[in-house]
Image (spheres, rainbow, N blue to C red):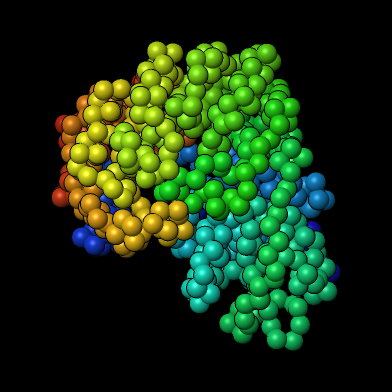
Amino acid sequence: MSSKTMDCVIVGYNEPDLQDIIANWEKAKHGSGTFFDAMDGVIKLHNKWISYADFLDAVLYAVDRKKRDINIMSLPNLGLCYLKSFLNEKKLKIEIINSYNQEKKNLESILQTGSRAVAISSTFYSEPDPIKEIVKFIRRLDSETKIIVGGPYILRICNVEDILYQNYILSYIDADIYIHDAQGELTLSRLLHELRKGEKGDIDSIPNLIYLKNKTGNILGKRGTSRFKRTPREIESNDINENIINWDLFSKKFYTPTTQIRTSIGCSFKCAFCSFHKMAEQFMLASVKSIEIEMKRLHKAGVKNIIFVDDTLNVPHSRFKKILKTMIANKFDFNWFSFFRCADADEETFELMKTSGCKSVLLGIESADPHILKNMNKKASVDKLRYGIKRLKELDIETIASFIIGFPGETEKTAESAFEFIRETKPDFYSLNLFCYFHNTPIHKKASEFGLQGAFYAWCHNTMDWRKAAELIKVGYNSITDSIILPARFNMWGIANLFGLGVPMAQIKEFMKLTHPILVKNHELSSVTSIEKTSSWESLLAAGQKIADSLN
């Protein structure tokens, strides 16, 4: 039996260095729209591309020389909190590293003390390199600890039919064990209990694993001398109501004043551009009672702001109303943020949202053309979408409208209908997203019908290619003046985080309005002037000073 007392440390997001990534994307900018799409969320400062959150940090530091970190990854990682709570109930000793970048020294300290395993969450990753970086860091500190990787990125890789491709990516990451399941927490708990037994541990009987195994037994083999073993699949269905996060396991400082909460697993819709419903494997709703219990705990601890992470919080409608009425009856007085399907809302819903404390919603409008909405399998009326934004604005609920440009069937006319919709309805924030073609989405089954070819941001179909869609996005950005571009990777979470830190919405909008023309200019893909050398810099410093005063 191992002498190490820690069963597992779970590691959260590793935010990669943008410089190398963007440099590589820029080299391929004539063959793919990846670089173009990235320009929504970066600013060039001191001739260096940085994320929008880092840019705001830099502006704040420039005005008062105080170091801050307003990155949304500083918010509690909901998946890690859930895993620690779940595994704690299974009598396992667990620690979490909420952000790899911010807590690397803490991870090093834990590994020096000793942990049998390190589990890496692959949420938010689209490439394997950030995961591999964590693996290499762990190997340098402790070559014996078992490294486990699971989560959405691994699930996507494992859903690819080509086993050779799977093996290539998994070998490149270089972990010891991979968990192949949309949930995976039960598999992880069984695995950790077996690892407690050391060489006597038998993991062959545990489903949903891909791991390195030598030819002589079921003990994990050494890397480079072993082959991958795949245990049978057994889809997990862990009851969301029985596994509410035990927030008492965490310091109140960690999850106050702003935290995230989920009330469901999966998505009930099957939008043609999205694979989430397939990845999640099932749709599961928490009861209103269990949601109330968790909210009471958070309210008692001092949480003031909640971000609902559900893709479809207001579906089913009756349940959503019950949640809102519960929040009102308990006088939680939360400020809350969520995704929202405004075409599905009635008048009572809008009023309940306002009364219960809704501050901002992200609206996946995607298109303002009925034919494109039909192609997307979006069952929404454009008139209802228009009315929904109108009512939300009347109730002073900030609106964030998201659109996809270039989906199969898109033409200049249908794209212009989206731009006109934005100009007419005037959402507070908006984004125009270049269509990204994933082969594991429903639209792939209709590829021949639409003449759809390629993958990711390099595609073409019967009515346009990615280059034409990019040109149309530039037209849209230059023609929309009354709404503010929402920076990619800052999004609703960035707004909620700033608001939770005490920054008034008016100040957030003032600063973001000043960066709007900068993000528009980024998409010209020509030489971009470093922001501190432009006429906007002094205005940004003045707006930053107001935010700094609110934060102090």
